[in-house]
Image (cartoon, rainbow, N blue to C red; front, side):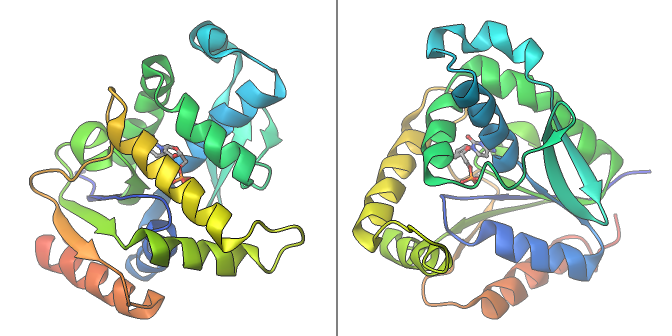
Length: 224
Ligand code: DC
C-alpha cells in the first residue's frame, strides 16, 4: 500500500516539530523528527571524544535507531534511550557541525527512507523534500525570522535552570542557519515544489491550521 509522506523542512526554531507533532496526531500519521537522529550521532561523537576525521569509520559502532513508543518517537544509541540527553545547546551545536559530514548523512539516509516507506509520516528536517523524500506527496518549507525563532527557544529554555540569555540563543541560531545553509552536502534549502510558510507572528494553533489545510488539499483529504 502506498503511504502518504509529508516533508517539512526549515531552519532551527521555525516551529517544525511542534506543528508536525500536532498535525500528525490529528491526521493519525507518525511524526518523525530527523534532527534527533543527527543529535544522537553528535552525542555519540561527543561522549566518545571522536575527532571529526575519525567519525566516518566510527559510525558502525553508533547503533542509532528510532522507536515509536505509544506513537511518540524515542531515539536510541544501542539500547540506551538518549531522547532527553540530546536536547542541550552543546549537542545542538555539535549536531550542526557533524551533520555536514557526508558519511553521517549517508549513515542516516536509509533509516529515514524505511520509516517513510512503511508508514504515513510527517517527517521534519533540513533536506527531507530535497534529498530524503524527493517524491513526497506534500513538501512544506517552514520559516520565521531569526529573532522570533530565538525568542521562542528562549521562552522554552527559560523554564529550565541555567538557561542561556536571548542574545546567546540568537547568535547560536544565526550560526546554525549559516552552517545548515552553506554545507556542501544536502544544505538547507527550499525544494522547488515546496510550499513556503512563514510563521513569524503566528502561534502554534494558527500555524498548525495552515499546515493541515495544505496537507489535506494536496492529498485529497488524506487519501493516498
Ligand atoms: O532540527 P534540529 O535542530 O533538532 O537538528 C539538529 C541539527 O541536525 C541541525 O543543526 C541540522 C541537522 N539536521 C540535518 O542536517 N538534516 C536533517 N534532516 C535534520 C537535522
